[in-house]
Length: 136
Image (cartoon, rainbow, N blue to C red; front, side, top):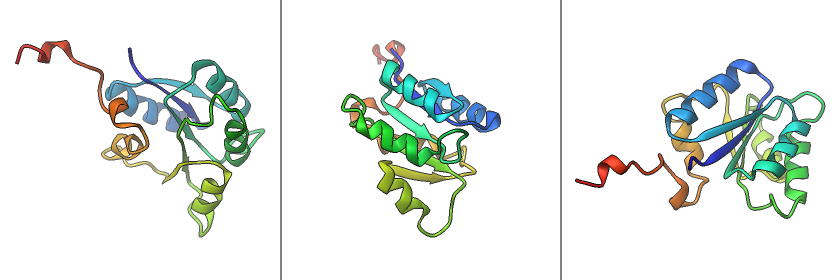
C-alpha cells in the first residue's frame, strides 16, 4: 500500500508539481486547497507526512499547524512548511507553530522528495516494495 502524504496548498500549479513528484516516487498524495479542509483530511486519512503552505486562504499555515498539533492523534505526524516566505524569522515562526521542517519555494524538482523524506522514519522512505526485484 502506498504511503499517504497530505498536501495543503492553495496554488493549483504548486499542488500539481508536488503531487507529480511524490507520486512518481511511489507516494499517494491527498490535496487540500485550504487549511480547514486540510485539517479535516488529516483527521480522516492519518497521513505519514503533511506538506503545508503558509499563505492559505481563510486560515494561514501557522494556525493550521497549531491546530494539527492540538490533536493528540495527529501530534506525531511530521509537518513541513513549504512556503515562499523567506524573510529572516520565517523559518523560526514555522517551527514555533509546530512544523518540523521548512522548505522554500520554488521547490527544486531534483531534490524535493529527498528533502521531505528526511522527516520520515527510515522504514517509510522510498518507493513501495517491488516484487520483481525479489528473484535477484
